[in-house]
Image 1: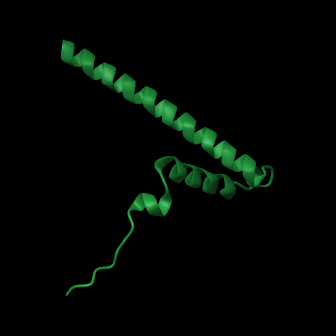
Image 2 (image 1 turned 120 degrees about the vertical axis):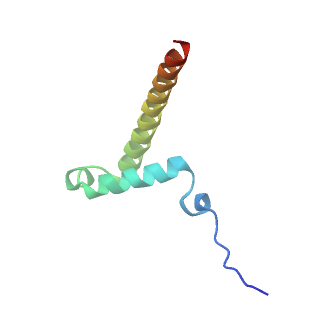
Length: 76
């Protein structure tokens, strides 16, 4: 009998996509001494959530623009 190590799926380790993005953004904010010295922890998390939402929104706009460009090329 072969024993295998059970590895939980990545989402179980890091949470969902938004949680991972927020964690990375908070780490970036903490690395910035000017930001980390002026913001409270809750403010940093709120800022990271807002940045993550803005990033997702802008990526959505970019994807839509790309789709429309491809559709125009196909219509030619």
